Length: 106
Length: 118
Image 1 (cartoon, each protein chain N blue to C red):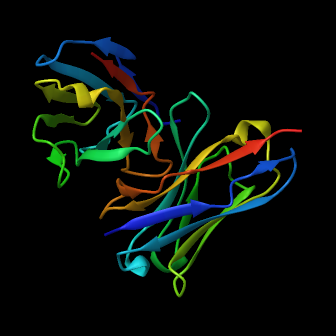
Image 2 (spheres, each protein chain N blue to C red):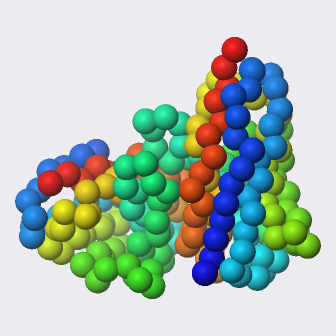
């Protein structure tokens, strides 16, 4: 079965910090990876697709990189409104799979 | 503006059936793959199902295969999820979502809660 492993499960940082967390795929998914932000009580929203393409309207402080099995997501200059859980998702083939999430706190 | 609005969530007994709907507007529904994603209380996201344009292909998570059926009504711009033989572990918020040119989800509904309990 496909596995998407995110780490760490949670992190705490200060406003203005740069934070980076990772997503590992159990097989090569090329760059077929998306990142989502989910704030408490809300639906997820798309931030990054194709591993590094910023979704229209998403703040430029969010970025993604990687290919194959290893991917990273960076927030450059953490803001209070970035408190949320972030999920990666593969879409190279069914079944699509989400990672377990990284919870970001201030 | 793109809008997705789910409905049909309810409290249902184990073994029961339920049909969720997702009313869409603001885009050409029949040109997009659509999907369902769920989230159990306090847990992460779980992909449930995708349906291609025109209903040409459907895909399911192993956890729901054989019990859930995804469909779409192009004339009504509505996505459906028929859920049969419901189990306690199906308890979750169910989101419908529009897929981009590949199956990333660029627009999501607000979700509808399904609770399976006796």
